[in-house]
Length: 489
Image (cartoon, rainbow, N blue to C red; front, side, top):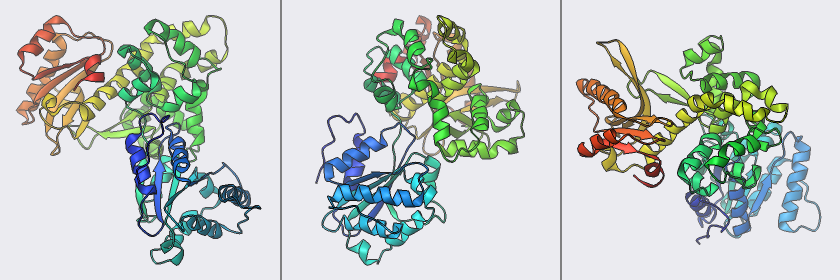
């Protein structure tokens, strides 16, 4: 049975197909699925829509509720779903789980427990109880076709449900991570025709759908000229939900217990400190002292750690969420002043923050946009092959003893270099940019890693001489502007 995607659901076609396939599976025996992803990505919207379309059961746990109260709320939700004449009471969670299995006695039905980490906080034995309930030869499982979906926003917690010696390891038949929208989908979601304006909005709020649909109620800049006033009114204003969003993101994750130090680590990364040593040096701690914090931030999906394309024993850290980067680069340094609303003050603070915005926000987020394009949207002919991985890296020149940073390194399945590239949000690129990349390409060629192509990305355009050089290169020099990023390959 094919379930049509709801008309009010934007994108998420692949995610909807995976969930509906799982929910309508006709095979006998109850099954388990895990759904996770950062907050505000639309997981609840997806799961509620799935239950509405199939007559499934949906329950969302409440934070910091004692075990007895959680069981009471769960019983009330079960009673509403089944139409029971009185209140359903469960003495313990084993009984509640068996009641979930009983919902699938006649036909496949999705059974959703949202915010699952909240329940486990009050009942740590829940994963083990679910494991026992789904034992392969248990009668209650064999006689049920309940499709149980556990959902949570704590990526680290949800990921660990199925790893190592965790009770549910090997039990799940689907593990779905709901991602943020990429820059192309975000433009369509924000309904922005002007490509530079769409990129500017993405540089700040990224691809989180709730920021437009729930936080700002669809408020978007009408034009480039309106962009600054939109930032001032909807991002930098204490009255806007976005103003305190980054603090809430960290406070809501149960794995982040000392949020002050985590904010300090993120601020150091936002300032351009990308290695463990440089981050530790910036906050005046030993590298070993922050190893745990870096790991937790990475597990929470707020940081990503990437190997250097040319030195795999060297890793760098990058902030994944543009709004987190914007907060720590632009807002946090002047947060007390932003809270004290006075006529004209926020406008002056935003003007003064422009250098930080361009260097610490626009440039690195634009690089990420370009890496996304090279990895997922560029044609094989553009790069001289299929890019399986797109990283950054440092090419060392032993003769001059100088390391040359490369913004984009497209690699094939064997780790071979397909293309190298440079990305500049605010610069109109010219021959000097090409000459630098040609020198780096020469160094790689001498090491037996000759790139097939040089890719130059610019948010401001290219000088005529560079365009002419690209035209003469026979495709070896690829110029990628905003139009090509959003529409081409």
